[in-house]
Image (cartoon, rainbow, N blue to C red):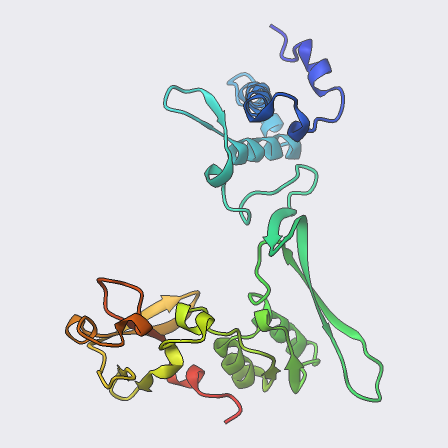
Length: 283
């Protein structure tokens, strides 16, 4: 039985744009799963016992194998199914084109693209030429703030570390401020991202800034004078934070509960940075 079927010439003889298949979503899925079965047939032949082992070492075959892992799965009955939506692997793990396996899909606010993310560092000294001194390229899903430390490490290696570095909010965090000042003597300048709690966004109620933090005694004091009942160490995104939680016996009868928390059951908790990171870097 021939491996290549006559219908394949019609099916793949021209560029396929699966999103333009007539018949709606069901027709698109049917078409995608037909493609999947064809690809599965090729992969099965490449991994057959009598197939030359060098066939499986070809880059094209390996890319096909990875694409099929990303895009398809077998259901309980053993039928090949097309992955959609949340069934797909994270964008950082799946490439978006067999022609460029480093290109990944990404969405930033209202912009969608497939490819990379590029970070430029330039000089802005007065009375001197403004030059691009460093370019960092990452896969698209890497968030803007993630390369901050590496950018400064590389600049320092090239003896280009600035005394001050003005950055966008996304590149700035208390951890970056502390680390880059300590390791490279770089002062990061920019606007810290505003609090994203309900209270901070609304500009009313008790956001984090309304609480007094006592690191020595590992306690937080709320605006009504109650002290936290627990202090828990957390590890978030590679950094150590703390969570101060208040007792139910203090929160439930509190007259300001609605201004403090929207939960009808749980008591208020506050995320706290380590003392060194919480301190104002300009102080």
